[in-house]
Length: 220
Image (cartoon, rainbow, N blue to C red; front, top):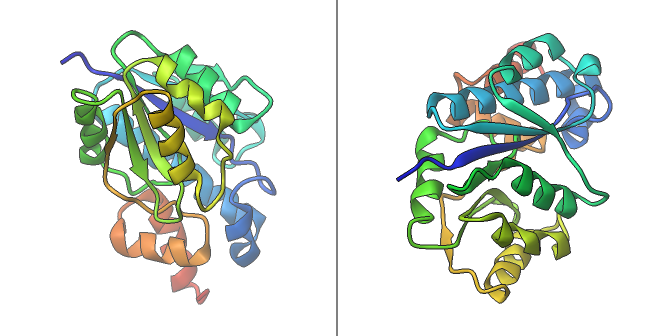
């Protein structure tokens, strides 16, 4: 099987704009550092597989936490600017930009605990399905694999960042005629409680270490 393209959809972790729910507990600068660490963790994981990688980026890395590290980590990959007025439209366009004819596996940067095995599971599902959806514990989804960009087009009509986004996405894909496979359930790390759970599940991750240092300093 020809390897699919790994599409990392990311936002530059600028203080005040990154991980705002987490920032309510940690402060904007720490939340941005956490987001940068999660971005770096994700890039490391996708790089290990040796598949083509495209980073669809919004925001300015020159204003981001760990901007130099992120630019260096992105350098081996193709980086494209996100295009579109809504998040759904930006996702559709990113799939078009990333596609190289062997399918696309999309991941964000909110699941730094995602492993290569998780990504392989999504890619393997594309052998028997037009799309594969990796559900998130909060009702959204953390990964989407598609055989062709046409199967990402239904995303333009899906309301994102809702507790039923996963169900809505599944319904839109099936309505378009796709057979939709499943993948492991992961937790998007958005809150302090999510971050504490990350320390337990992925203690060696960069993002987990950011939180572990806060806990060691007395933040609880």
